[in-house]
Picture 1 (tube, rainbow, N blue to C red):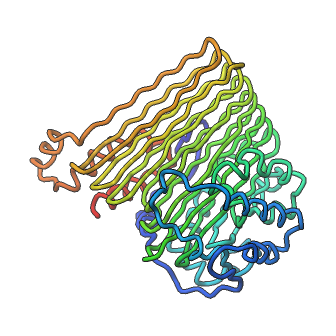
Picture 2: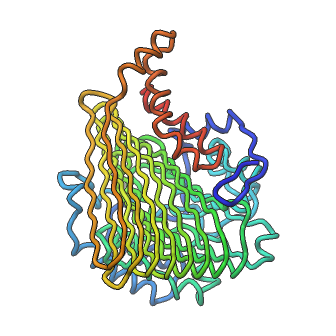
Picture 3: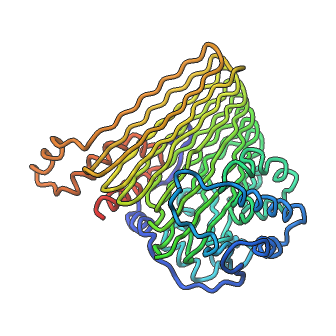
Length: 473
């Protein structure tokens, strides 16, 4: 039995085969698609997506307005000089819109992909529910019957909108507005897939729900939209994993995640990404915590060409708590532009940020943080710690924290450190017969060990293995 925060997860025996297969995301099987919006983005692309999904007129109008917003906004400064060709990307590919409830019903090539990634095995071992998205749409979605009897909803976003419009429409777009940034607008215009979760008042889910997002096609964009509402006094752990095969052309991943923790609710949102190095990973994630609620983001960023991701928590109710823990690893020619944002809008709210980054070769790890306490908030506390480790002479790191305090009787603390790999430790390990790369892996895993221990045991071991692979390469 393993404990994650206050929740216990049972039966997490380690399976080395699963760990190896999940680490190896660089494969794909040839697939034929029933629905294909073609290459490039126009209003016709948006109309095709909306028609294929049989959406109501208001949602098509929402998408078209978002498209106009996307066109009007400039590229973020971190992407200046990049050549993302929006006219050479495929925005919608699927074999069908209906998510299956049995792995036997999933098309063979899709099932083989998720088998190789170990998803069905994980479902059987310790998950309360799984959603597996393949390119644009969810191919498989299932929640344990006991959870469903308690009123828990766990479906893809299209099913959530169709079957539970009274909940979905009330919260959709309220935490991340369309015009928040260029890529939230793009997601709003062309989104498909993603998870919709609702946990009724007082229900505490003891096992995690997991979504797995797989990009399989070349020159493709994945735009899942996830909306999570945890009602008063309820608890949820949600995990997501992401992989894609390596192609010569650009792949784009621009997701939007909105979560709402109502009074006294607790949410842990865990991300373990392992993108191939042709992927632009440009994600907007934000949570809203009401009175006495707790939101915790745990984020591990490995791979991709460029990642831009700054999970955010808005502490909107008195005594709400927020915590963001992240690990970023920037290998050769990669940019991990990550960080955290916490906004204190109510009294006696507390937050904690812990960020660790590793830069290898010509990799650049950049931390961008915001801690803001509004003028009407008092007795708030924040602690922020950022540690960066440089492996090579050419490795780089940046830290750009922003702190804005307007209220009274508040306390903030910010610590940051940058260090090179310890030559004495490296020498010591090599003198005992440990090869150079293995010695570096041991030191790096020791550097991030306290954060990786926050992940479920299988994920923690898998992530350590991914770090070793990055260093080996």
